[in-house]
Image (cartoon, rainbow, N blue to C red; front, side, top):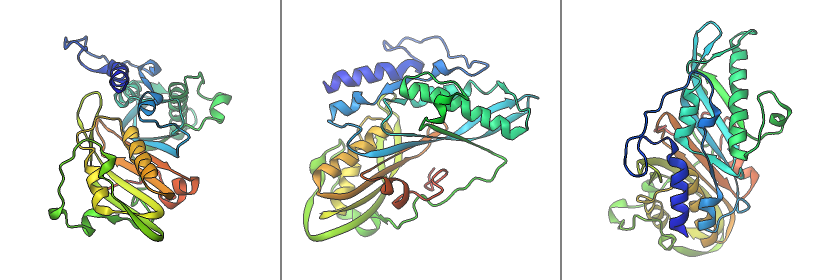
Length: 324
């Protein structure tokens, strides 16, 4: 079943690759001169979740995408450039394949957007169009920019022009211990490079404790191109079993040869920890390094306050690691 699901996902996600499945060269992609929502490629979340016994009822969460290479034209041809931040909840029926989002955003590059009320109106118009198109792709529903449907959509798109100062902050307002700073890495054997929950050691505790660990040793691979994806993992855990830092690091390293989307990696880590330990509180964030001008940052948590308060800074947009 896993192989069948993998083939189905790869067939969907490879729409915009430069070669066909048989290796033959396809017609080069030509960037359109105006907004083209048909470029967005939705991928059903259930395709991966079903194979791992995961549902959207197992956690709360959201996916935050930072898109750095965004530009369009004002009515006078002036190029407006900046960063687009997109957020949507983890219970959307679909995700969007990352290259398709990049190509979609590129379709705005030569498009003139009316700015009768000044440049800020251009930003709002752009945000509404992106929000409408992503809403349709994520939910498989039809909504137009400025329509009533978008008033109730949980999909958010926020544009920050380059001429504005970005609000770059430390990624988390609570203190996380970097695992490599508290364990002797030289004395640890790392020999498992495919995800293995048996790597995690369960140590009994007499009382409930809270652990907050971070590591930048996450590497997984794109399930379509097999290119490496580099990330930082932040884990907040409270429970009666000790979250052994050595085994946790070995577990994170075991993703090194896995091929999954960023969201899938985060959900797998969350569910393995949740099922392995007696969990009172759990939140996992995977902040990935940008690739192709976009970084993807999924967070999954057991409670809303962990999702929005205990981990992420109040200014969660533009919260980044040094590598990002």
